[in-house]
Image (tube, rainbow, N blue to C red; front, top):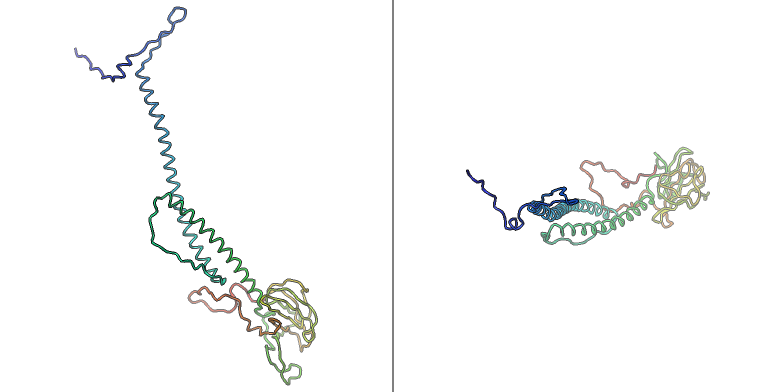
Length: 311
């Protein structure tokens, strides 16, 4: 008869020995017997010890992995944001040229280098992008102010005619006396004949200086505009504005009449600069020199871009 082989035991197991019997006695009589194996307790304790050390290490690994994923995501977002910021910078540069502002004129360059590590690269990118965006905000503020001033100047410069679909009966400069038909006299504006009561519209933004009957002008409205310009609308039947009122290009300031020195219903349109009459058809445009190239096949047209002529 063969004897089954016995499992080798460790030195600690041999020292601990076999199971321990605990006898619970009450009133000198045994009540319960409890068997306790120290070797089982040793194994359980070993597993508990390993778990206590491995769980924090595993948790730390999860935290590190999550941090790496966040770092990579941040780096991707920063790269996309940098591209968008560069595009905005290009657009702002075009607006700066349009508004007549000086360019940045800042040199950039140098060899491309490899960052020491991804974490520091992402941090530096965030800092650099924040600084770059701050610069863009300042540049955009300057451009917005300059463009606002430019648009205000364009709208405040006389352009167009005060009545719609009107022909010119008298031009600026020397003309034949319209009353006698003989001799010549200087005419300081343009005459536009139109039916009595036709709306007369402002050719530029401004503030009404006077509404009064003035000698040969008859009932006239005088508007102070930008760039030291003044516009006069004469021979009116009636005025629709009062002194001190603000008017915008295209607003009705009165209606065509024949008051004052006139041969019939028309509006005398006069433009002055620094108090001196100038030809309304030769007023320089305040537009900047920069233009966006027109697409191929585009039809050329006159007038300031974005600012319609007086209606």
